[in-house]
Amino acid sequence: MQLMDVDKQTYRKNTNLVIMGFVASLAILALIFGAILIHFFGAPASVSGESTGNFHLNLIGVILALMTCGGVLNTQKHKPFMREVYYVWRLKQLHNQIYRKLAKIKLAADNEELNAFIILSFYFASLKQVYTLDNNTLTISTVEKDLAQLNDKIAALGLTASAEQFEPKMLDEI
Image 1: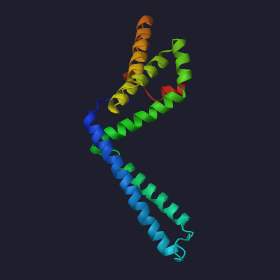
Image 2 (image 1 turned 30 degrees about the vertical axis):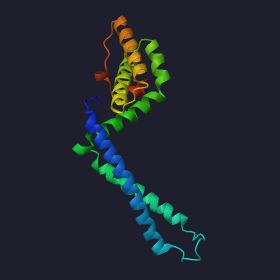
Image 3 (image 1 turned 180 degrees about the vertical axis):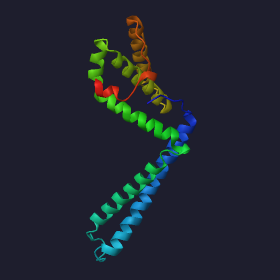
Image 4 (image 1 turned 135 degrees about the vertical axis):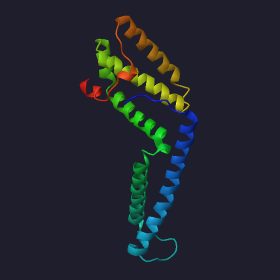
């Protein structure tokens, strides 16, 4: 996966719209699906204030709403409107994969393995990009410091390693 330029304002606007749309759709669809299921399969109304035992139908309504909203998002992920949102989502997934192997990757970097330097270059550069897009000003300085130290080590060893060289399959080789 290659890093791409993302317009911060477009990303923030589209992400907020997607989140608001998802939450609103989920709530409305859960109510609709729950009401439909209760109408057809629910227990008859009883004395006010007593439980009707329709919790499982409401839960199924929420699950159906979640599946519907997820399916709609899945069909829309390649549309131009979702370009930045989907890119950052995939980037965050890669961050999780790298983070789970970070100890091994750092050990491989200590052993001067080129792929480890490439993975770390991508990891720190992409973290910096995501932190900038998400306005995470608290930890971005740490990432910048780690990236600078990594670049100094790569230069001191006379190697060429950059984020552009990263391929996700490299994670399987570490």
